[in-house]
Image (tube, rainbow, N blue to C red; front, side, top):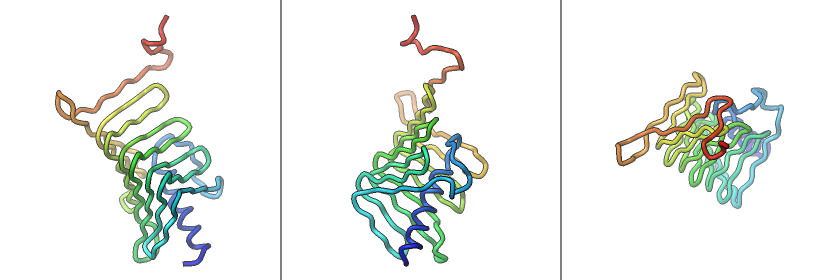
Length: 169
């Protein structure tokens, strides 16, 4: 694969990841913002590439960070799946998603974030063990994490204009 096609694959991965979550504020035109990637080790194979060690993909105000990011292609050399593992963070201007692992399947348009999932938007917080988000339908499903009361999704939401108890007079 040429350097140009490797760069195109990297850009495709970054764009796929940055367009997967609601409210990210990313332009739908991939040419609007440059894509930067960094890691301690970059590896290329005929089936994709990986970034290891403080791996990050950035576009505009959005950042995917993990210990390892891998991208996989299908028989047509099209991007088919992206996996991030080890302290995964997806950060946008309005949201932060955290989990132990994330898998984005481009064919099904689903992003699955697993392992100690925490979603924050402003002061609002939701926790669970598994988040499934469909890029096409913008539907999401959070599954509960084990607690003494059973598997539970937990959240704290502040209506507009309310003050959290720790900040009240």
